[in-house]
Image (cartoon, rainbow, N blue to C red; front, top):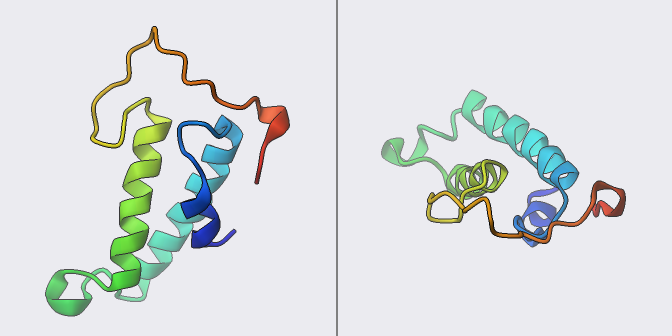
Length: 90
């Protein structure tokens, strides 16, 4: 799974199985970037790859936790219309 595949996902419409697969792949990618020193590059601001991956990781984690993109909780009475796991894209 590539970063472009994760970028193309709609985090609020895809299935939870897709979110979990994307989260696992993105977490391992971010950990690898940290291991190779990309997080402390550019005067401790991080490389462009790391900043892009970290931003996606935060958005993905918020979607998994029933938050919107700004970090506010989504109400329980709202239907998100997620796809079922049987129609998984990834």
